[in-house]
Length: 322
Image (cartoon, rainbow, N blue to C red; front, side, top):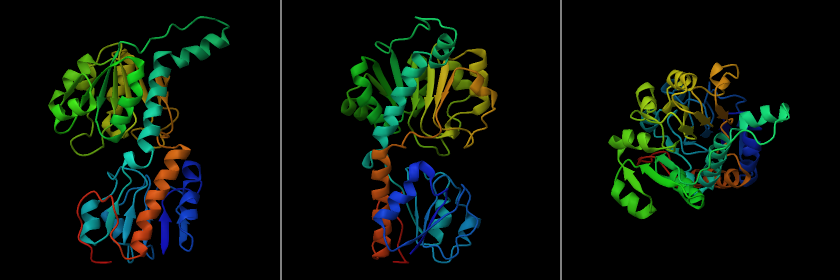
């Protein structure tokens, strides 16, 4: 089968080579950028961060599977794929090691912001010792918005720090509170309550119509002036202009960002002048995570090649090409 990887061949530490090793005998093509122009002759698409629109799908004459190498499917026109009997599947964060890796990055961002990494560099350059004064995590309140695979992994890693844990769950918040043994869990309508209480707000939810711009001018005003926002999910959850204004006005203390309003972001964007720790969408980019994702991607491609239905589909689809 012919498999198109919609990114450069060396993206994410050579992820494509990991998949190739698991799938000998198949032909792989690397698009070279996050843009798909033609799907003719392609059996399987790995879209990565590229948009898969209805117009692009019109060029597909053999496509049987769109296999994302992560959990996010917001850039794929699922309805257009379904109309063409093309399977769409992802890799849930909690089966690949991805959630664990992203959770580790959350801890890194929390500690980096709390200890003021930016000011550390200045102190060393000026030969100043014992400064900046840090903020201890112990006793602080961490609000986790989204208690899926990543949210749960974050909770498990934060327990030893002695923080107060609260969260937002899309459904069954009472059950989530009991199962996760955390201090408080609310539903989507309780977001304001979480923002008022939290010293750290960690976004761990998918991007969709209802969550687009969840953190905006109004919600940022609710956050504590000494609180930090951390986004390891999708850039579209946060209004770029509103965040920039909040940082400039110091209505929040800082932000940790692994995802952005556009990717890659403009490095000259003046938002980076403020107290922002930024990482280049590397939350899941670890050896353990990449190997786990590669195995899941290869498994579904093998299933398609062998006439089986792929697993981890976002919704039930009726097969007609297998």
